[in-house]
Image (cartoon, rainbow, N blue to C red; front, side, top):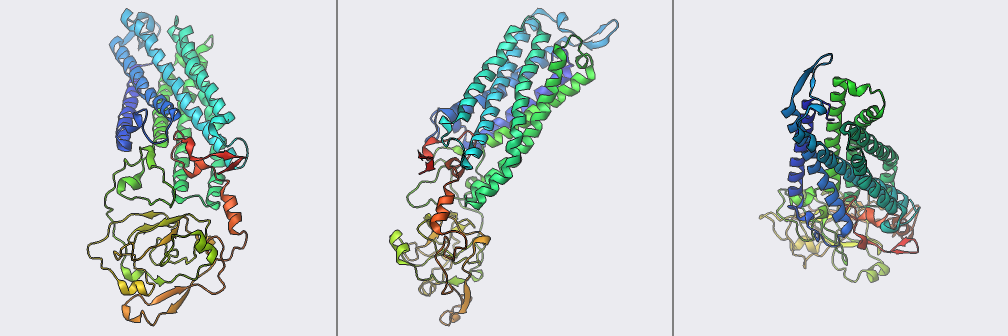
Amino acid sequence: MCHTSPSTFLVWSLLSSTLFVFLVSHMWAFDRFRCLKWGAGSGSGAFKRVMTYTYLLSVPLICTYSIGFTYIKYSEGWVDLPGLGVIPKPYQFWTPLHQRMVFPLYMLFSVAWGLEIVTHLEELCFWLFLLRSTSGQGETHWFRSPHFKLWCVGSLLGAVGIPLVTVFKRQDPLQAEAWTFLIASSGSLLLTLLFLPVLFGFPSFLRRLKAEGTQRRVVLRLCHFHDINIIRVSFRFVFVLPLFVLGLDGVLPNPVVNESLFWTDILAFAAALGCCSSSVMTLLIFFPRDLEAEAGYRERTTHGSIAPTEAGGPAGSEKRGPIPHRPPRPDSVASFETPQLTSSWQDGNRGYSGYSASGYSAQFGMAHNEPPNSATPMVRVVPGDVVEEDGTAFQLFHHPDHVNSTAALKNNQVDLEDGLAPEDMPHILPANMPSPQHKRARPTQQWNANAHSQGPYQQRAVYPPHAGRGRFGGPSPSASAPDVRASRLTVHPMVRNYRSPIDLIDSYYQTSGGNYV
């Protein structure tokens, strides 16, 4: 773009500098730059480090390219040529120093574009691999899959091939610019087009995950990333199409678009907007912030397992603070009692004793009242925790006015706002609460004469005598508990532990005969 106006590179400089400032601020809010360390995070390997440095290095390279050409363009200014009028000073009339600066700046731009292709090719291959693996097709191991091999080959071609084009055409800066734009934009346009099937197939992928009982946080995060990806792909077209037009027109014997100052400027402006906007979307996808952890919510882990650290930061690095939220009034919680559990369930859960809060919902007053079975992972809930609809328990500090209630405990009345000691009222809660469509055993409301004198705690939710022992305690119309567990195995471990397309910790799962164990 050495033949464009100075204002073109000024726009590129402003947008790329804004992108760099956003990058620094986001990485600071993400984990205080700890992710930039090679050994950051437990279980993170070289793959994540390579992808992190690849993306983060491309942003300052674009800034340097834009600011450098802005300085040259405004230093050279405009010139009045007979028959052409006042135009930006052509490259042939520049000072020798500025002419020598052209090739290094073009090399920075080509290297940055090659690194960007590496980044976007990895995301494309990752989602194609995940969609096929989750549907039961193809390889289940990322580093042995053909998608990973395709990424390796494509990354090598992009990171090495684009700078080589600039090197081979360095004798003529205009031709070097045209061929660099044409080759690089062709590769980026191909990747963007190949990403369209992923976008169109993602809604059905999300529906399948929800039907198979994937955690609510993972599904919501994937829905959020799907929306961001739609915006990102749209800006990718805004970025690559203008440069493809400029590059294709530049290699023709008689260029048309490049001879018009209006069209070169407007296409360059659009490319700058698309490049920086899509890079912002990529940053949000690769390094997502865990707003729940930053707000002070702490998810409780299941027995026998360690929940992975959210936001990709090192384990134990999050700051846990009080939550500026108070649970609802105690009179909004209905008491309920646990039905008689089968001996098989008790044998499979030796740690269980006391009263079950399995019927409690996040709405403080809605009771599913469906006991768990041995197939459901258990999590210990301390009274006063906030429990989401999917069973996720979040630590919540008690209000100073909370009072223990021994009488309510003896009558199976659970007051989740009272600060009862864990040893006085142990609770076992399924890690995945049933969704509304899974309510199979509806509780009945009975008058509790013993609790009549205790104020609002006068309703008791009791199981109907015919309640079965399906996945969530009720009769299972379509599948038994083992069948449900078998269907859950189709959810790829990378989906269950999903944080970002580059945060692929291989130790989360093993493969055995094509099944996840």
